[in-house]
Picture (cartoon, rainbow over the protein chains, first blue to last red):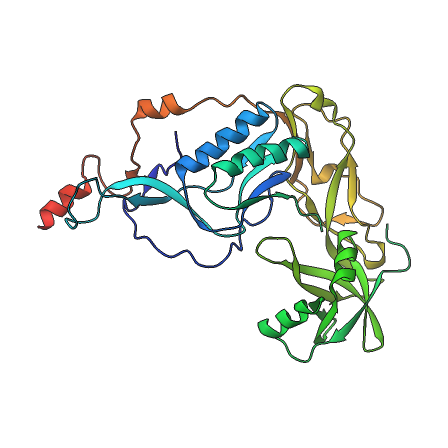
Length: 138
Length: 221
């Protein structure tokens, strides 16, 4: 089941703007290796879940996987063959806003080559360019 | 441990500061930096980027910076990275006296293979990689090492459990967790549970059950 909030203050949101780069959540904080996004945009809950399953299936029971983003923005969509107007449509799905530099997945307790292959599989599920990163030591 | 001779780097004074001038300096293969502390005026400098980054990758904390023929020992106080975390864009140096005690953040490296890792699904989770310590400026080690070969499943390593070199005290909270060895549980697919709850839409805070938005809109009209 894709992620979504349990409780919200308002059911619908305006689209908003997504400007600039990530200045938070842009380094590997919990694991040893991570998948960093090089582009920004909306990452849907289904895409997050697809990536999580792809990584989890590859490493099976080994290691620990962290998902660093949460889809907290509802996106409305009008039903097919509906005329324009009559107010804002119902929320259809949830997205996380991702800026360039955001580390979306992290993994801990697996060898480097395994982590690299796992994230290569995840990157095929992602709608943006991404790259493999390691924990910063300097 | 640091040797008696500290790594040395040359720097030149920057006359103009600001985003654009800093960007120009970076394009020339230099790195903008600032030196401050000891109740003296701050000095904006530019250093050779490659030499300084090499020093930092080797965990140098204390660097002798030569500016206009005058050398002063400086502590690497802060490092700024670009948004992708791939390039250093600015360094803060703090002037220090070699005999004074300074607070510095040191990396904790866990060495050895923990005994508990032989169990299937066991993971050594190092939740804290750096801790704050206090020691003499001329006795700052590159990093702290701790042998975890005796750690079993369920064991934890706290800051208080680290063996620090003589003359060094931990500033970080002694109860801070550094590493924990645990066995990961098999992830249970939660699909059925969520489907049973029927939670396809989140609850709205401040609205009673059954009081939908549509109803409220209808009343307005």
